[in-house]
Amino acid sequence: MRGKLRPWMRHPRARQARLARLPKMNRETDSIRQGLTTPRAAAIAGILFSLLLMSSMVLIRSAIPADPLAAVTDVLRNSRRLSLALNLLPFAGIAFLWFVGVLRDRIGKLEDRFFATVFLGSALLFLATLFTAASVAGGIVRLMISGSGNVLGSGIYTLARIQVYQAMNTYAIKMAGVFIMSTSTISLRTGIVPRWMAFLGFALALLLLLAVGTIDLILLVFPVWVLWMSVYILIDNFRGLSEMAAMPSKE
Image 1 (cartoon, rainbow, N blue to C red):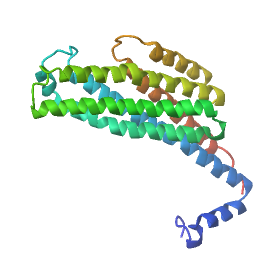
Image 2 (spheres, rainbow, N blue to C red; image 1 turned 60 degrees about the vertical axis):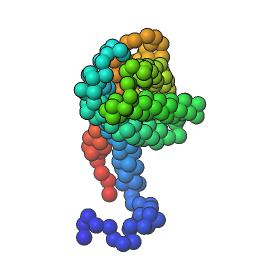
Image 3 (spheres, rainbow, N blue to C red; image 1 turned 90 degrees about the vertical axis):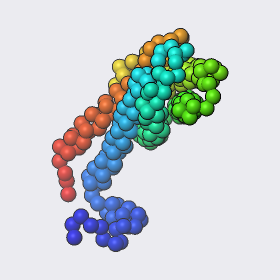
Image 4 (cartoon, one colour; image 1 turned 120 degrees about the vertical axis):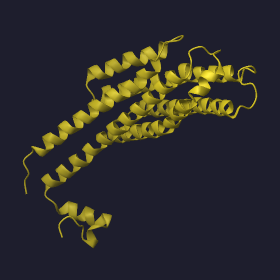
């Protein structure tokens, strides 16, 4: 029946043997179709990561008062919103890992070992710093909800908040800048995105690397950049699919 594989075709070697007997045009079309699914997966993962991380950041920003010495009751009042924001971060991290993995697969043999190492290392360090900050924030929120001890009077709340701020605005933001820089360099060398997008990535990376002091919402630069790249990759992928569909088929 059409749409079902015969038993001998389910074996990988049987499928490869059958593909070898197909006309060359069909094999090239199958190869192109398989290659086009990779950037689509990267784009979807990047969009999910961006939306989840931006939603978490906005929720945290709206739930925590700007003054580090503000009353703990202001934080307790928004504890559910904080818990939701912190619970979104693991899923954002998973989507980011998928985005990085699919991008590396897309680049394949064209990637430079040096920049590939910096690319992967900065991505992992960014996630490690992000999860560390989230765990500290989650721990202090649970401590405040339990009501054990004078959190504000003992200085625990202030110390935890400063630690989270330092982790995100000093270390995570720098790793995000290195990731953008290495990705833009690889993109410029391999041509997977237009040159102007790579150069704009360099500018945003320098902004994150050289940022000193408090700049409100500067952390949003990274997920916005990933979202922008992902949307372009997705549009370019659909454009490639339409061009492939318009190709004449030869039996």
